[in-house]
Length: 191
Image (cartoon, rainbow, N blue to C red; front, top):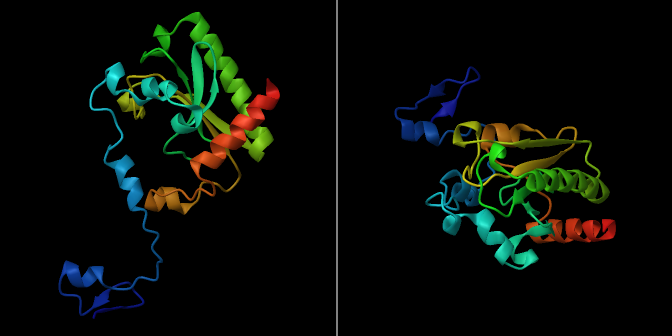
């Protein structure tokens, strides 16, 4: 087997296959489950309400749909592929893609649920900050562009490390069911 020299060159590597076998001093964290997200396995096949996961979630029980809070015209749901624990989405029930197309009632409730979500997440996990935003259209990063959803991402100093940048992997200390239960219980205490 070829050996890496201190200068990073390979002694005896004659092919790409040989190169792939050279130890490089890095440990590997394999996360094949992320391929579902990367490959778009859960992405709707079309932009209709019938195929939309944000339209389907409210028809399920709260634990099954990962719903944290239901309002009159919008609801709060855990992000299936969170950036951090407690990453939630605020979605109108109505299948609408663009912020300029939501009603005043939807806009007001999305804003109120966002504010409440920040309070709830603070009570549960004491983040040091938040990223809050909408990605309008696929070009802007919306994974599901056909149904408006606002992200609320809790942040802690040092939570952006090399894993998401280099390995497209995020280490999450809790499973969705635990996070949803904790947030829902804290939200119930606000009501």
